[in-house]
Length: 195
Image (cartoon, rainbow, N blue to C red; front, side, top):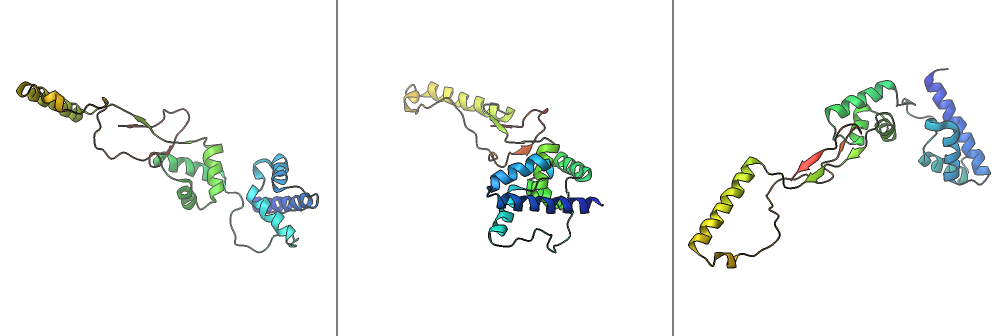
């Protein structure tokens, strides 16, 4: 029996089990938990369990496969895992949807590859304040010099200044939190955005 036939047989077997649970009046969540205990990673998704229970409630009791387009039954092959690893090495900001489109596999399979096999969480860059470039430091020194010169020329100058907090803000194109998200290995330092 080929790998494709084994996967199809496993799906049909799970549908029979879903039908059995339906007749026992089990909920979709209970049914999915039981399937996950028995089949592990090969268990159908919770969404699939809901769909099949709905079909059984609607009187569509056939658990055999319906004709459908040909697709690989198991997408999490060593090849697809390795290709996913290389894609994330090249561009750590790829979305799961972009990876799924490039690998031509389901979004759920990509999610499992990235989270379970590659163990890469999506991390937002942290903002690190007050790290100024040499140009910004020079600008700050020039501005301070201008203030001192103004005070020397006009002793009342400081009374005309509105005092706020001590933060200095520079115009820059900062990324949003969503734009700064990237896949990281837990062993590497998290990304930082310097303000």
